[in-house]
Image (cartoon, rainbow, N blue to C red; front, side, top):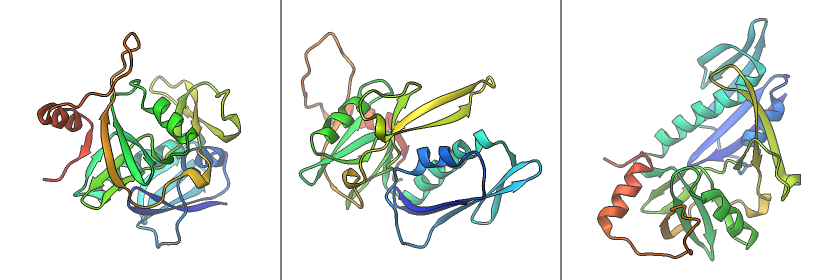
Length: 232
């Protein structure tokens, strides 16, 4: 039996699964989230059937013939959608965030811009990890989705003892492996942090690094591109 209760954005989540080969994937995908004692708003149950695995959320049937490799990714996709809905009417962004001196630095940019690299450097420097994937911002501050930092398909040389892998199947039916880096538990932030700054990350390896204050219109356009759900 694999069972864990944790916080994802603003939602309390519980996942319970009967014996199966997908438990390592559940550890990789959900082991980095901070635990909670609150009653779950989202309760996932995985049970074994002759045809595969049955998946329910809050007693609602989601799937009933999942293969081992599909259990973890299917839960994760459904969880992402639901926690973003629960977080509304906050501004929810595809972004990374690290708290430094009690204030959150929110890093916005497309995949490959360098959010994960900057996030790792800030954590190594003593920052508190909030997210490498998704943050929710409202008048009370910012809270992050504490999924492990995505490292791609190669095991890391640095921090290998905290890396976790999971196998999955791509759209062409090929089996793949991905790695996530779990920050130390004491470096994972719990609750909301004030917003210290929002940074739009651009990847320009041929130019020296610099910080530029951008005008409000451009900032709004960049944030809109990164928005999962916005206040009406």
